[in-house]
Image (cartoon, rainbow, N blue to C red):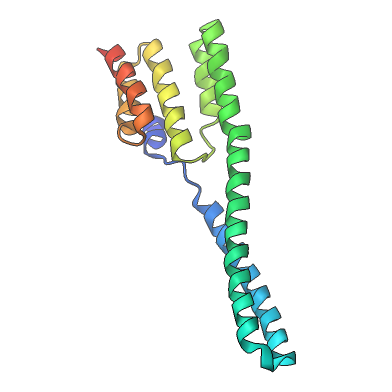
Length: 165
C-alpha cells in the first residue's frame, strides 16, 4: 500500500472549516439582532416582554434559515464539484475501459471534502478500478475502510470483496 493510499483511506469527507464559517455567520447575525433589540428597548422600555419574545423568535428562525440555506448550497456544490465529475469519469470508464484515465480522474477529485457518504462512494469507485487493474491489496484496504459507514454501500462493498477472492 502506498503512503498516499493511507492518507486517502484515513481521510474523512467533512470540511470542518466550512462549519466554522457558518457558526461565525450565525454569531454575527445574532449580535446584529441583539443591537436591534437594545435599540428597541432603549426607545420603547414598556415593550420589554414583546421585544424579547420577538428577538428570541428572530434569532431561532433566522439561525435555522441560515443553516438550511447553507446546507442546500453545500449539497448543490457537492453535486456540481464532486459527484457529477466522478459520475462522468466512471461513465467514461465503462465505455472505454481505460483504468488509468479513471484513476487520474478520481485522484483529481481527492482534494475535495464532499461529506462522508460521497467520500465513501469515491473510495468504492477507486477500489473497483484497483480491482480491475489487479491491485487487490490496495483495493482491499479501501474497501475495508468503507465497511459500516453506509448500509447501502455495504452491499456494493461485499460484491467487490467477492471479486477479490
